[in-house]
Image (cartoon, rainbow, N blue to C red; front, side, top):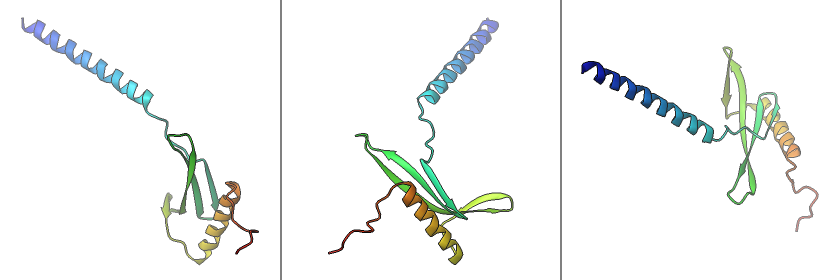
Length: 112
């Protein structure tokens, strides 16, 4: 009798593992792929990352992430502050992003 209880316990454990594995595979198949940036623009240490997002109605909008990237002790790091020289790199990266994303600047319009 003890043998049959142990056998039944092993069978339940195996069945439970199989169900868990199937559920994990189904969840992984349904999970959306990790979103990637639509573009990046970098000049020196200044980096602009562009993220395109979709609304439920299908229209899109873009977010722009500004950061400084640098390497310290062999590892990559990011920061949100820039020194004077890096500020010029940031301006150049922003100019590249504006041109690359075809953002209207308003230049050339007459002011009232």
